Length: 167
Image 1 (cartoon, rainbow, N blue to C red):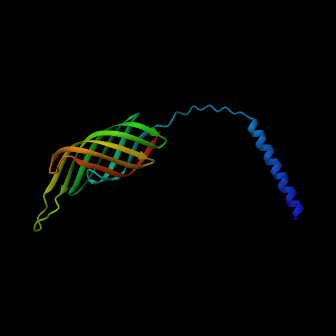
Image 2 (image 1 turned 180 degrees about the horizontal axis):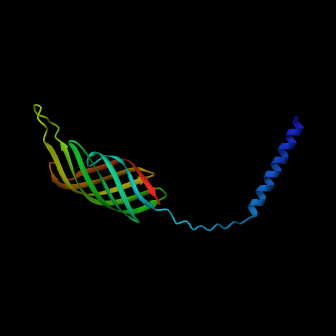
Image 3 (image 1 turned 30 degrees about the horizontal axis):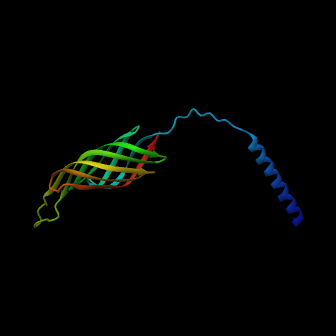
């Protein structure tokens, strides 16, 4: 193939592509969709933090509101937390919420004397938290007050992955 033939072929290809492009620009296409808008239905994942160090996390969403349960039983480390929340911002796959809730946590004490099982520290609490989930990355930070072997207030923190299920 000579250079002259290559230039002619490229010129014809460019003209054909330009012609197709200008023809599609003039068409106005109206698309009607019967599809409903997607909404966040629930989420499930694994997070690190309060109440049980490693927690399973499940949240059910009801429009702007959510109910979130997290916790796990890991022998000496155990805990559970229930939160009721209000989503004040939702943009694409990210939401921000404020939650109120309560929970309990049980941890072994740091000192173990002479081979005996260490006594357990306990904490029953009420909390308020900020919650953010962006494309599955979940972070929650808050404060709690309650009764047990810890002083008031206590910082609450969760970070991990919680897969969003959209309908």
